[in-house]
Length: 260
Image (cartoon, rainbow, N blue to C red; front, side, top):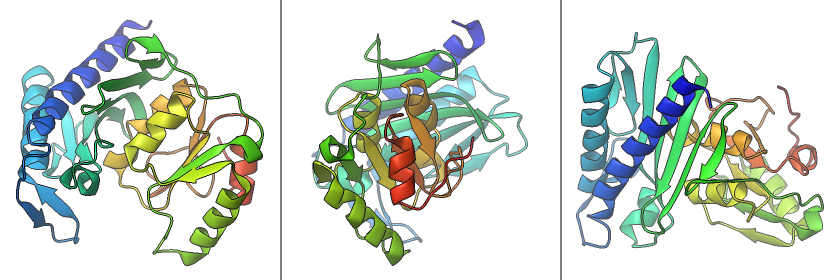
């Protein structure tokens, strides 16, 4: 492995594990739920977990920038920055459902250098960096080789697609052709694609902290990660993640053309 990439992978894994374990300490503890200005929920678990991540990064990488869901951006002019989502799936978290995770990415501009996705309630860790592979609990992870949509599992966080109803129609048409469609959503759906247990995960609205860690994880597992226009990016505001075998077909069904 490239030494720098390996070092950043390990660092991202460490941050994700530390902050995720802090969040886990609040899980199913009946904590208060508040509402942010954008209408989304937030808890002391989200805030404390992000503070934990930020403290570790400040200690070990004091010149790097940080972009986090709960506390915004630090050192926006830094060459390298860490992108944090302390609890991806807060709505899931507050209902006591274990399908949430902690996401950590390291980036230069829009180029993702490493990503980690930690799922504390189920004990799963995914880490990846470009050219270094995707690692699931210390072993190489691969997307499935399923090439038939009729045998595929397709996932989405929310099938309603409220912002763009026409995308909801395309999702439902795709789901009708698949063997199984589920809303095992948020980052958990990407875990299933990266580990070969689902073939496609589709989100209509994503922030950079939702997507940045997931792009190298999907790609290094042998999959394809794009936005709805088919652009290979974590910053497109939405995402389609698939195995390689169904990448073109799924994007055709959703009227997206893959560009690399």
